[in-house]
Picture 1: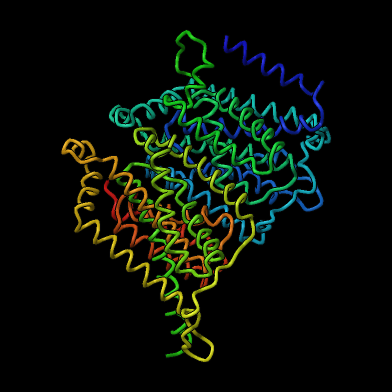
Picture 2 (picture 1 turned 120 degrees about the vertical axis):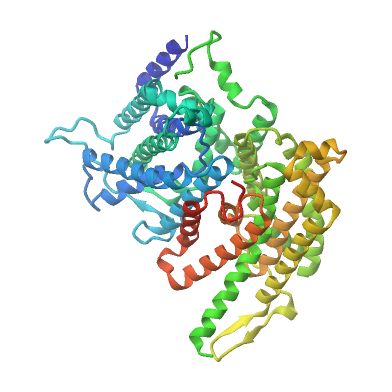
Length: 317
Length: 290
């Protein structure tokens, strides 16, 4: 049932460019990149039990990496710049992870937020990174291989399909990760860190690996977001970014892979709707969040639960 | 004394002043977490609320003192109302929902501020009799208002320490932090203690905003900036520890001030590098319980 729904959703998204206008193509591409970002955070929050409020750090690193790798009036090579951007985000996640994973619970929330904010202030103050105005990437990265160009990131429809491919690939990759021995181990850590340690698992290394994978995928999302709009600013690192993606995960259904996707669609569309209505759209958004927390005592994950098929399923995706 | 030594001493004063102000915010944050177990992302918004209260009430009454005098009971009222309406429902919930709810509260407070008072940057006049500087040399001087701020913050910190250590309420608060169940079994209304602590935290943050308004000016986004630095203070000092918050605040105030003066290239980052060092050395903070 759920698999059928997911396939149906993927098919609908694949066919959408046949009917959708330019505005909606761009919006949906943005949403699908946010879904990649949200799924990567859910690997930490939903499956490893690490609530990070600084995940935007890696999103921003992926985005700024593309800027730094792009010549001013020429295109960066996609096949070089994307792997470098993702590696940069991974390395940053490893370095920050070593520090923040020494803490847990509320300390972890505060420390991740503080580190992301460090990047925010660095970007705001750095001449190289364009300061608070940000920078623009004049030419989209070029994916040509030996003169053959498989797709064009400047073309709206083709970019849409790249975003769709990124989202599906992330979904499948994370599903594979979660079904592996490693995936079961991190879920064991979420359930009981003590027990996993007693069983002899190197808990810290497993958490660090999960943190690095999540950072890499967030870097990919940031890289593609920078390529979509051709501009990057410190808000990519901002804690509003981290907060938004956190809400997507929780509102969509934490601890599932399709939940963050639903959350990305739901929240971005709601945001789009509210901005249409009023300049002060954050006000109704805030009220919505508070009501959601208060009225769903089982947690908003309960919303996600309602989406699950009634028969009990193995916990592996 | 030579100019460079004097300059150095002025920076020390500035750093201490910034640290003491930070303490007013961080102490509330750490108390609310240590006693109520709540992570409050909206704490910076209370600082912003204080600054905007100082601005609008000074416009209204023409006097900063009057504005502060009116502003404090108003902030306490806001704190009591929010505790009653929202936070009381969060005590037994996961941190995740506390983060989410307080995040929603930030959005509401930012937009309410934007709706009511606009998005402009405002200044607040210093009280006339504090509007002068002590000349130190021909080129260097120190503004009296900053000294005054430090003195007030220090006084508040002392009162807070005394209240927590010596009064009956302070005893209850400490007991509540150590063992909540036991306190309620003894017939003490723990809900009331929580309400008082929360209102106290809100009032401290708002008061910090009020006295900082003439120096720091009043602008959108001032809340989140101070919130994040307060988080760093709490991580460094150890969650729930007032002593840690005090030491952490001073360290951060000095690190930030000296970073801006002597290493402007990395100015925004010194605070976070300090945090990284402390996390490596003592993951639970300087005074944290491990």
